[in-house]
Image 1 (spheres, rainbow, N blue to C red):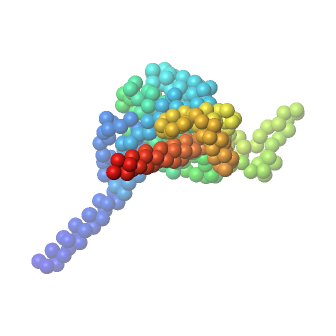
Image 2 (image 1 turned 30 degrees about the vertical axis):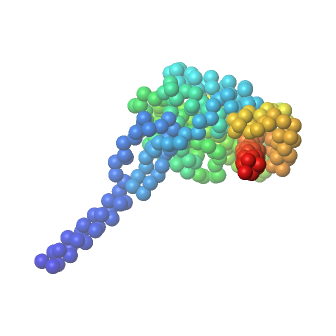
Image 3 (image 1 turned 90 degrees about the vertical axis):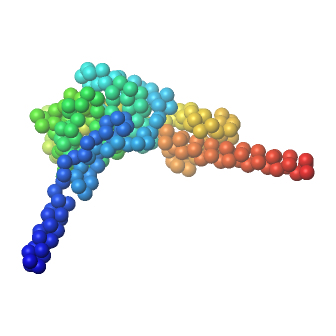
Length: 305
């Protein structure tokens, strides 16, 4: 009997270990929990999980990118309305509002059924699985990948191409891919690739390597480029964020001088730099104002005493 009990215990232990290795059924998704979700790989499987604290940035908060806002919003409005629309690639200078624009559009059109699922670059191989889980849903989904770029032979590269091409396995009318990148062609380009270019008459034709690298970005129907801001645009963005953070004397000459010095130290005039300056300036000025109030209160109390 002892041998049988030992055998049963070992068998149960083996079954338990196997259960850990075999992914179970995906958990039910609470689509009412949020307007934004993340694709997550866990030990027991993969799932779509709600984002509880969604960034509530609004389109009106974004300055200096009016043309970009118009083009991407028009595409998003078509998509939400059930009309044909394109996958979108937003490229350009860092900190100029690419990802903020996507978040702002989500907040604007969430009441009309728009939802967002953020997918990390290393999880792009799961895109067909994600599409399979949402294609029957009534909502309209943006599959969002931030700061997208690839090195040679990364598996997510081919998976993304499949979904962008709309293959039989991945075609889905209720989802689009919005991606941001600092690279226009998403993959590194090397000097030796120039040797593959060929002259045909008066024309220059790129080699196969270059063509392959360009082919991925060309699969996005809408390309939108973002550029560094000039000084006036940068200061206008600073003013917006100083008002947002309720900074005392927000539009003073001192604040503007400090904002320009901040941008020089960072070597950049971007929306992100303006936002970071405004947080710093507003925090210091508000703390200083509160300290002055407390000091005046203490002095008043001593006079009365």
